[in-house]
Image 1 (cartoon, one colour):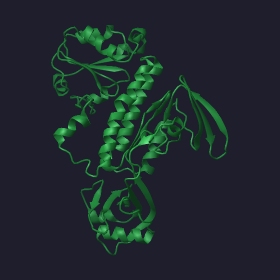
Image 2: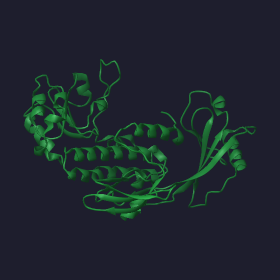
Image 3: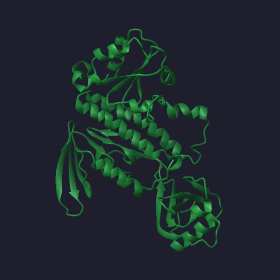
Image 4: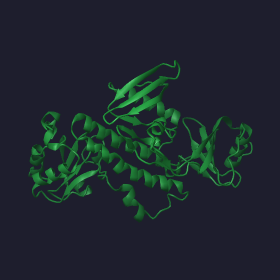
Length: 385
């Protein structure tokens, strides 16, 4: 685990985004108008520096514009839940704490001092730190701290009266636990903080956003490539909103992580194929790394009956992965059986034996919202099987 501050992570993500030839990144642009239609979206954009406006038409729109989403408001989608649970004061400072703490190193250091309870979090290379203190807004508003007052609290928390921290910045963050009423309006979709606000407790906010964005991404790709019908997009909210609702409610509870593992693991880990390391590889490869943009069929069938069935059934692109017995056992696939997975790792079918593999695959693929009979998969790299 690593503690990576936002101002370190964002440039990496931005460089990666710019590496895609089909992506154009425009900064300093705001949405000032939105016209959602049944078949496309019209967005009016304004350059905040020049004031110049322009209209963009798109088949689909993804609103990833944060907790105060302009697009969500324009779509008339309400947020439900507490918007001001508590407020945290974060002080960014520099001080030689690593010399004091020694090893091993951790991502969060909790302090229970009665007058300076909070957390110390490393925030980049060297001795750059953030000291966070949470205030219950139901009892009292969070105070406005000066740099001198923050330095005093840091000294109390660390336990060194002669420490001289260099306070660089003091900011506030409001804890909220809210969920959008719906995640889609016509051709527009909400994702990330625009769809849900999750407190930092448990660290599920960004994780929920990333997984939801991936879910929406592969489904949009399937529809745009003609691998699936537009009804596939209806499953985005149906599958991801309940997960976000669970995480929102759990993060609102200060003891949200204190659960019996036997009760919580099925909710947290269900709905995804197991991660199993593959043997005899020069580089470590997981079963999750074998997923492709289409469907993936995992099997341990020496007779190749699943392979033959996969080459004949219509539907989205389908790649067959023949596993060794140990890996297959780790994935819960009996000898001769098979497991069909979507691009996000969610199982789409499981069979304990190779009885009628052709009919089994056809039934599973028909269950997906895909116009399977209208798709010719032969040109989509079927030779990869």
